[in-house]
Length: 292
Image (cartoon, rainbow, N blue to C red; front, side, top):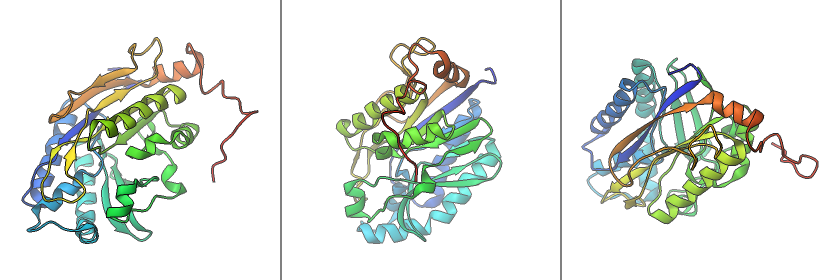
């Protein structure tokens, strides 16, 4: 594999009852080990996959109680992701975790890099169900910034965030060409909203996107009843890439880890001299977006 390529793993995570944090951590470590064993540079977990921890409770918790319980797991989760990233020499994009922060209740993606650093990106656009059930609030401007890694700048767009083109454009303008999209969708309608929007983001920004979601059913955990996912790695639709803009995709709705190579040099070439040059051909004289 050339230095211009990165290898990514997208965990199609099966939600199932766990006995406690140690049981959950064992699942996470196994996925990270597999990704590292296959030479991956990044491993992506799905949005909200830590809700699985609530299955260890004796009874179903309502939204407010669930937030408080999940918050007790925040520090152990952060430590787990950092430990695994350093141990396996891989960058871990730790899905998302609902937690109470100093700024309120947020849906947070923890990104642990192999150098031991930990970064947080809060979901910018809370869905109606997130607001109603858990009281989740959207993130701030700092959450729309890319993260520097050994393999260049990456962007994080959490599920619904991918359906707003402004965020991907800002991350692109800030130097990212590789995006990670942890998502959680209950049915195929919801999944395809994310999937189609991510494909559009790949075309309009000439970038690659890695998608990872949850599968299965988990009784006893509120607002997390059923899951639908088909992990994918998406690219621009141009000659250096797959004809349909799909570098790889998983079988739908099964426990699977999707692994694929992404050629960062090909993305740069597409931006410079592709069949179409969406970034270079923007009509800035007609419209613009001012980042606050």
